[in-house]
Structure formats: structure tokens, C-alpha cells
Image (spheres, helix red, strand yellow):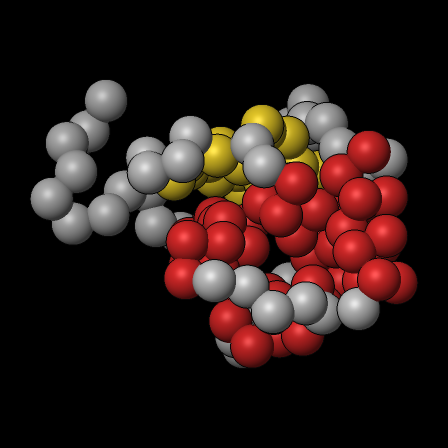
Length: 129
């Protein structure tokens, strides 16, 4: 388990694909109001394939490391493959047991990614800004 903790810390301290893209085809951002984590994901998509990906945001080690790990995992994949990712895929990437509150942190990047991939601009009940 220690090796997974070290990998999480490395992704948090040295995130992969951190930043924004100047002209993304897909961009989506959300937060977890319970803990304050926030993640934005930008994608450049060509022929239904993710060619470039960046994320930015702030929050706990788990949320930011999960976003970094997820960006490494999906670059070069199709949107159809992205839509098939599950919560278990993310939890397997993280590799350590998480309590219910930390699971929400770990899944924030997946929620943002899928909302962008499906073209969700807001969740039912949220007012347009």
C-alpha cells in the first residue's frame, strides 16, 4: 500500500497534464461543495479521439492526484472509451482503500470528464450562470 501512497503524493506534487488548453473542444469544471475541491478538464478531440488533455484546479491530494492519473489514462482514447470508465476504474487506479468522503474526492475528475464528454452543461436543478 505504501507504493500507492507514494504514487498519489507524486501525482499531487508533480501532476501530469496540469494547466489549460487555449482552444479546447471540450471544457468542463465542477467542484465538490462539501470539501471545496475543484477540477476543470480541457480536451482537444480529433476524429473522436482525445489528442490533448489538461486539468487544473485545487483541493486535496486524492482529488488532484486522481485527476492527474486520469489524464494519463485517457490521452489517446476515444470518447466512447471515456464514457465506459467506471468508479471502479478510478478506485483501482488510486489503489488504496478510501472512506465515503474520500471516494467523492477521487471521483470528482471522472464526473467532470464524463460531463464534458456527454456535453452536460449543468446538472438538473442548477441555475444557469
